[in-house]
Image (tube, rainbow, N blue to C red):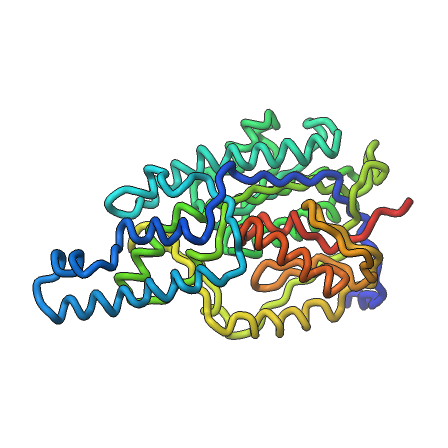
Length: 378
């Protein structure tokens, strides 16, 4: 028997965000700090070149390689990022070994400091929600800077005091869009609970520690003759939200925001434009294609064309708000760069610029700072 045709009209999913938490590490670095760290291990002085290479050909190769590093450091001065939040300053021992840290070292560090960041973000979200830990029904987590098994979410659950047998989903392979993919996954789980008329309170978390990859990125720049800009952009952060489906005692009375919808689009033949893969040096490697902005623009125009109309948009970080914000298009549309669209174009640019300038790009966790959602009904 054929299935009935789905209705084309938009229906609200009745999903609500009850709490939002964002946790940054205690340190911040400026563009000049990256240059300082780079020159510790790759100084450009002629004396250094003469002492490391025995013939003119090798010296010429070094100067060519050094030019790649110089270009990256020049780009670093013009990103518009004033400070980046990082887990340690440029004197962190793990980042100052003779060789870049191995993946086992990075994993151990993440399961210590990354878990602590995530626990702090989750506690902020739970405190803002005001519910009981026993009411959390699911956990959805994501990271692209750790590949431990069991995943970091297992240790966060233990530290929070949740039931270790709670249903958990740890997303992998979604890169910078992980925060939105996690929210989308939680939303679909919530809809399943709504169909069964059961309450759902889902803790959604994302954590990235990118700063420790600085040594392997610098090594790739110099040894592989590559201009790699990831080392100039990314920062460290953890974020969390509590998503509910309107069933239960708190219902939508304590909701901060309402989730109106979501969409997922992929542009064909763009798999090599943005990547984050295992590197022979022993850790992860960022691949950014130069015309990425054009890909982002094409995907943005497609993903947002079918989003429902909405009211005023909000931003969870403390961004100075313009005097007037026009209502625009809602929906947590996910694109290949993990961005979230705000209703007003000028407001969206304002929020993006402020957060990026002050904290850097923190990949997945950034989606909890910028949400394209509407205020709950009074």
